[in-house]
Image 1 (cartoon, rainbow, N blue to C red):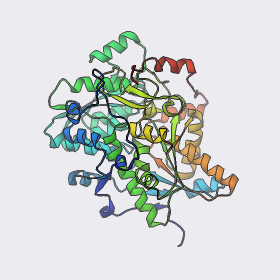
Image 2: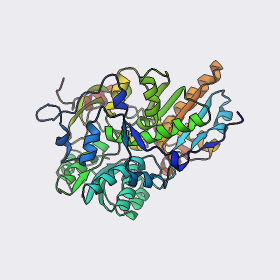
Image 3: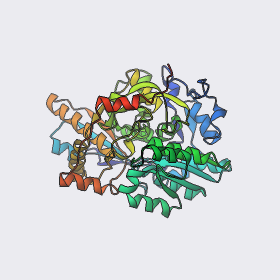
Image 4: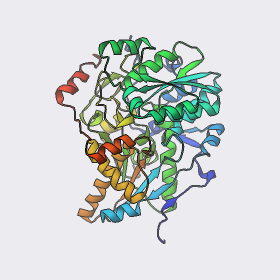
Length: 455
């Protein structure tokens, strides 16, 4: 075989026709969602007032291995998929490593991220059910942008509660969402009872994804033709994002490769859960023994310093309880540039896999993240999103370990999107004014104190 091409593409016909549900191959399932009032397991129909009915069914499905992608969603995918698998030859050369580094680039759409994979599915199912609007939250803005795109395409109204610190840092994200017809509200806000309560307690807060989730759910419950859509954490989201890993596996098979190490940034779990899905299936079924590494910000270290416990998915404590690695729904992350990774908990699926030893996790300070981002963009000519740069940092670390050992391992990481709306963060790094905040044990205890008393 000659030199592997810089980019490996699938044909349109090779775009997967089904999503992969990793729960069907897990040795043990994660613990069920609980009703916070009764502490009894939530039934599928209990989710209908919050999510679309089909999405509620997907959320609870632990046995169906492959779920058909509706043809309208697959047609939507064709506008920006398949995404390329790229060999990072120039980065390899700069590192002088024998490792082979690949990345799956998900930034070739207006949202600039992988989020459009799930947004298209959620908007489609909402329209098919006869709903007229959705609400959601967004951190850095990629998810809000993606859902705004999908809602505009399928003809739905959308209200986005954007974490206030990101709303202030990224005004152009708001402009893009509004261009697609979405209404964007900084969170916490005075338009919901949850938002007003949070502001009364802490009027200067920069907000959190947990706050924004509470507000979005509260608003959705006021209109029977409206439902809430979440862009990460949930089983249904990891299902829809599995297309990333499925495409990656097909592309790697085309060039005769298979990853020894799979790396993804981790906030709620959508990107890593999607990228690793097809490869995790091989590990769960005993075919391979690849390493999986979740990379999270040191400022919001749910896996590396959190507790595996039942917790609310939102700060307002109106969602069902999920057992996950969490810092507590009351944890307020530092207003840094980790963007969409500033969430207090982790996907129940990823939490269970991590708890059972199928995954590893590391946390990284943001200055080191931007050092890696800068090296990457100078070598590979793509400006990465800060979230993606967490994965880049660990990919570089693993490649340097290969340099030390002389092992030519194959590394795959997820480049979730582009960083063109994050220039204030890059400017702070370039100017030397970026600070690294690592929460103290005492600060984490404040979040853990908000955990519900559930065994």
